[in-house]
Image (tube, rainbow, N blue to C red; front, side, top):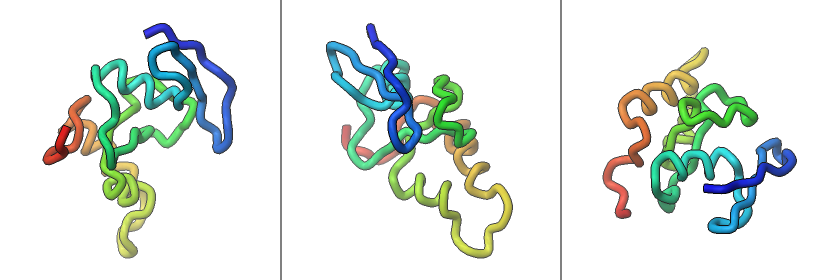
Length: 104
């Protein structure tokens, strides 16, 4: 995919453009290119290290919006880096696959 990388837009994500997909966030375009499909409805692409400028495929995972909420807002009683660990656990078990049970 021939993409051109734009400037960082609010709230801090790189934006890119391509003839095929138009304008989208760079991390989404990177994941879609590697996975060979679009991000399914109800899913988002999460940065494992929480660094919005680190857009390598090893740092990206497709998660449901519920999983994404659990990563960023773990239930009370879970202290420390519980949310960050969850992202890595999902990536290790899923790789570039989308969450199970989604109708694609």
